Length: 242
Ligand code: BV8
Ligand code: ZN
Picture 1: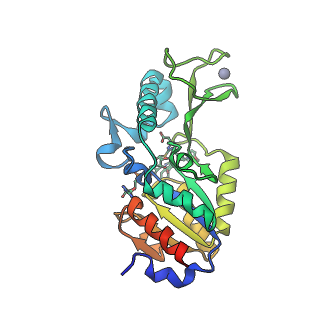
Picture 2: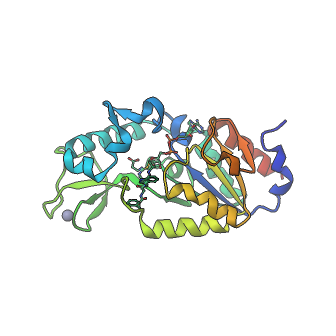
């Protein structure tokens, strides 16, 4: 039986599709996730490294971590999962709400992407309101801002609030969608893990694509226990047929 057979009949009335994605959708591109063996970098717990305290304790170490991740991201390509979401824009109104900072959705051609946790190719000052794109790797780390304070990756660390304009928009589109596909995320981190609730309140269909169980699997209308690079192209081909 085809993966999405169960919701085949409901598909035709679907206009607005929202994807909530996490590290799992980039796993098949070769980007480490945050779980299991990927949860450690040089024996540091990545959840602890992604904090303002870790940055002020050892800004050089945190910069080395992000430099290594950035070089990894520059060395990989979007996979069939990213590409399927980009292609779907031809057939429906698609918005991507991603926890990923790797920019692979945009590289795959997705035009409507909200980066909830920032971007690994952006920097900002830890004090003044200076912000910029990363053009080249800094010779000296931590690099200094013209105001003399240290620059940091423009990402959201644990204990820091999400960019309010991005979060407000994410809540709105989640609350207006007809279908929400939650792909490659463990839904452990808040407030991103509340987005399916906004969709449910709008009676949207909820589909989870993940080889493993998540904290919200029981809330889903359909659970696909497979990888995103396999399941998403199948979803798009079915959507096109309809
Ligand atoms: C905030 C950017 C207000 C940086 C990230 C105690 C209890 C509950 C909550 C909290 C608490 N204490 C603090 C909090 C709030 C905290 C939080 O949620 N903590 C968690 C750990 C409990 N949240 C925050 O701090 C947020 N801010 O709340 O501000 C506030 C302020 C002060 C105090 C309180 C509240 C900020 C959160 C954002 C942090 N920044 N990233 C960087 O990347 O370096 S989070 C980062 O980790 C990612 O962006 C992502 O969000 C998360 C990892 O989750 P996933 O992406 O889902 O990845 P994971 O590895 O976990 O799972 C991968 C999944 O994919 C798995 O399910 C796997 O099975 C699946 N998979 C694997 N391969 C595939 C696949 N699926 C499909 N195909 C495959 N091939
Ligand atoms: Zn500055």
